[in-house]
Length: 180
Image (cartoon, rainbow, N blue to C red; front, side, top):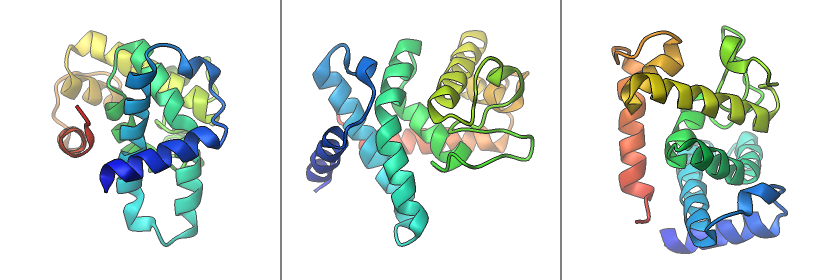
């Protein structure tokens, strides 16, 4: 059932005119597998709000952005599923969300991380967030440390509860949705 749903969603996304010409460069099979994995993950994450108006809009936005997530993540050497998990917990795929400190976009960036970008634009917000995460990975050397630095802006030692929660969500997503 899960594989059939992936194929259906992937077909809809591709037929729906996803506008990301640069996202289609490279190994098509690998790209399609990564995109399919993310489509199924997002549907699972958003399942609790399936009967609301917000569900359709968030799915529609996710379908448009997933090719960009795959492309930008792979360019930065980051697992696209990790980025999808972060988008899920940063903005819940609601790109109009604004955080307490003025964070915006899919990855809720602000301040230095957003410098030179318009985080209210979902694609620029993705670029800013993925670059910020990539820098954090380079400084900290591991995912828990990078998530801490991403969330706090200054340290790599994973002490915050949100790091444990997101790492568990990422590990669960890998075991549940990873196709290979």
